[in-house]
Image (tube, rainbow over all chains, first blue to last red; front, side, top):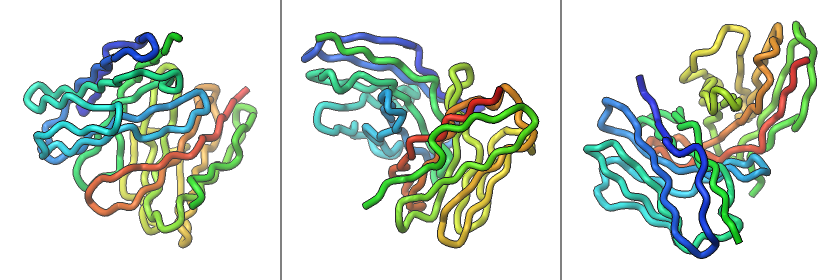
Length: 114
Length: 114
């Protein structure tokens, strides 16, 4: 079965500090793409970062970066210099190559303390 | 550029009734996917439409159906509603370039079945 596991239902971080959210996935396919989506209370899912599985280099987007360990099927998200606006549910997900179907984890609720 | 628009935002229905939800994708996006989000099951894929054809279907009963029109707008229908159908229904649109780029989500329709 194709699954995504986020082992931390909730996390908290102090403003300006760094936090890492964990994600592992399971697929036997070699062509896939990994994503982190953010869902604030407004419910709008917003893409945070995307990683192609065939790329060894870890993706970065400003304060957001990933640690992609392909052999371990691990895809963690690091948020640096956390801001109050980062508070949200974070979902790890993947799609197989050529498919638009996203397989999501159960999410991690991130709280940012002032 | 307008985002993904879902209507209505909120809906209350009675068990046994049917409901139709609408999704207007971003202009130029031809792929529309639907997801059900519940506290217990998380985000689950319902189906994906591309050029008026269903390309992929999740593991949901036949009471859940959808369609896509020539202008890429999509509707999903749930017949014989059950209490367990209460959920946030999210629609996502994308450019299916084969590169699995970003899926853009609407704000969802909150369905409550009483």
